[in-house]
Image (cartoon, rainbow, N blue to C red):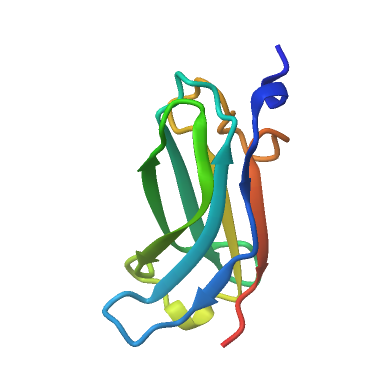
Length: 125
């Protein structure tokens, strides 16, 4: 079965900001979820902060509910999180964010699968 056939969820440009708030990392991720099958009610965005070798510094996620058939608007999710215990937030040089269906009904959770939408890039401070 071609899961992408029905998938119109997307992520657009990602804005990363190191904030003065309590969290080490704040990601603002624009997304849209048009044409998602009616039985999918939840999507998840997960963002990871990585060091230069790809090691995980911190990770956070945000689940959001969508109406049956997807959402017709472009929206934004804000994901805030801290560096993991024993990790320094300043060591993060890259990010990766993924949009997927967290219960495996529609969009595969396997990294590298073309039905898992990902954006990644360099953290600029």
